[in-house]
Amino acid sequence: MTPASPSSPLATRALDLAVDGQRLGGAAYLPAGPGGAPLPGPHPLVVCCHGMDGSWLRVAPIARRLAAAGAIAACPDFRGGGGGDNGGDPMAMTPLTELADLLAVIDAASAWPEADASRIALLGLSLGGAVAALAAARRPTQIGALVLWYPALQPGAGLRARFTSLAEVPDRFEHRGSLLSKAYARDAWGIDAVAELARYPRPVLLIHGDRDESVPLAASQRAERELRDAELRVIPGAGHGFGDERWETAVSASGSFLAWNGILED
Image (cartoon, rainbow, N blue to C red; front, side, top):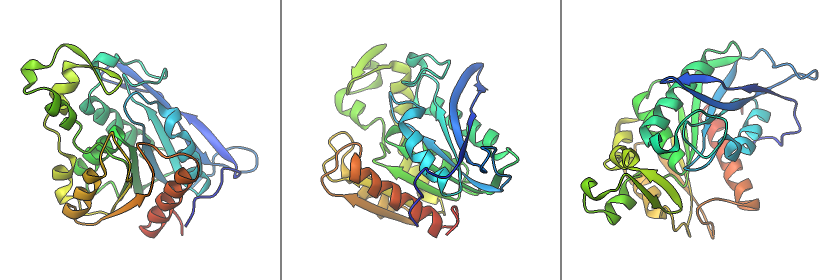
């Protein structure tokens, strides 16, 4: 199944949560009737996770397509990320703070009256892919499917290549264009989302470009080999991020995968 174009009526609902005393924002898109009010459902829930220095706006176009296909598609603005709809400090942001954010969003959105809590999937881009994978590993019975676009499944790998130990990491440093903190390095250093997903019993779709210089294709190839039920879709010529027709290919593959696995309606 290919997610419908966002010509279907959609309702928008603000995400406004408090996590560890800080505001987490973003938005969710819901199927709506002709008057714009959310349809009663129940609708599956897909939470879309942006990457490092991104914001909920980065995944909003994907979310709108999934909502047009019948899902509640939530886009959190992780605390300390690149968006302005959160109350976090960028120097306090780590993969584990984003994991806490994601789990809070899952809990909140799955309790909405329109949501079908038995059909929940996660979709993540880059670092958001690692965060989504960590959440699925911690909640294997709740998360029914996982879609990962060019996921940074070992977010500490680049740091370990640059620094010989955590002791060498300064309090603040620039890494691949992002200003990060030692707290980030401490949390990311030993994360291996593939190893954490080893016992995850549900299907995983990986979508990766063969010209990705930020997160090499080998990361997703390893995941396909080692996970129980993983499928890798390679997009020729794509780097770290998909544009235009490659984006359409990734959205279509994601929607078909979620329909095949019972999250979206076929």
